[in-house]
Length: 104
Image (cartoon, rainbow, N blue to C red; front, side):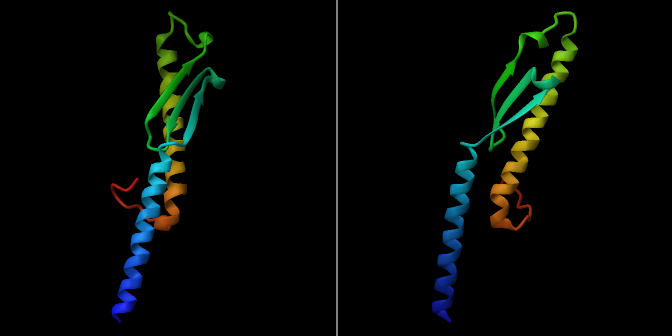
């Protein structure tokens, strides 16, 4: 029985290492969110950190700042949703779709 326990512990350790590696790799993956037909583009990594915001000149209207704010907000939320989907896809293979608080 002790041998089975040792084998199980090795498997758990291997799975933990694979999960940590997958979590690290998420930080190098990027997704993009857009709005306004592509006039606002937001890049987010798999850790849900905004990397870049690109705004085309035609999106900037000094008389309608609220529209630009809405475009940025929409693009950021789009990118964050895609980052969440990426994390769920990459980490879901370890959790079988089970949400584990603090994991991702």
